Length: 269
Image 1 (cartoon, rainbow, N blue to C red):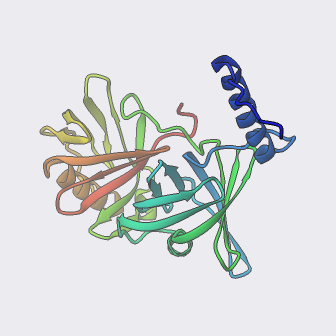
Image 2 (image 1 turned 135 degrees about the vertical axis):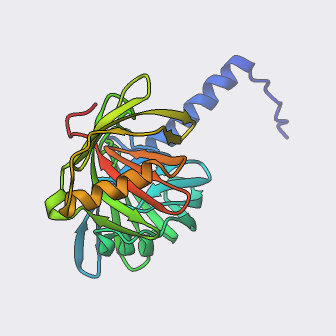
C-alpha cells in the first residue's frame, strides 16, 4: 500500500495560491466585462417602475448606503433605514424615521417609500444599480451624483418654498424668485426678504444657524411679496434654525416646524 506523505507548502507559495483563488472568484462574479460597483455608497435615484408606469425622480432623490444603514431622500422628505446585505445580490430594508412634509411630488415620494422596504434583489451594471421588488417593480439608480452638495456660504440661495409643520407650499406666483440671500464666508448675510433688502450676522454651531437682528430697508410691502417677507422675518428671528443641504437644496427649519427651502444656482460646484 502506498503511504501518502504530507507535503509542506511554503508560506509564500500558500499566499500566492490564496490570492489567485480569490481573484478567480471575483472574475467569475464579474465576468469578462467591466468591474461591477459595490452597492455601498451614494446613489442618485433616476426613476421608479411600478404598476406598469415609470415615475421620474426629483433631483434630490437619493440613497446613501452604509454597511448596515441607509440615509436617503424621497425627493423632498428625508429618511433613514437599517439594511442587511446578502452579498451583492440582495438587500433587506427595514424603514426607520422619516420627515412627513406634504411635498410637491407626493406620488413619487409615496411610491418610493412603498417600494424601498423588505427584501430587494440587486442588479448591477457599470455605474448603475437597480433594486427589484418581488412583484418586479424597480428603483433605478446611477452612481454619478445628481448634484454635488452646494456650500452653505458664498452662494446666493433663492427661496422656493415655505414649510409649516408637515406641509410645504411653493411661494405664490407674485413672490416667486423675490426672496434671496447670501451667507458670506464670515457668516454675514445679506439679501432681500421679498421686498425689502436686509442684512444680519449669523452664528453657526454644527448644523444650527442663528440669525442676529435684521437690518432692513423700510419700503411698504403688500401682496404676495409682502406676505412672504413677513413670514421670513419671523422665521429668521425665531431662534436657532436646523440647516440641511442636499444637492442644490437648502432647508432651514425652526423648532416649531416652520422653515424654508431654498435653491442654489444650477452652475454652483
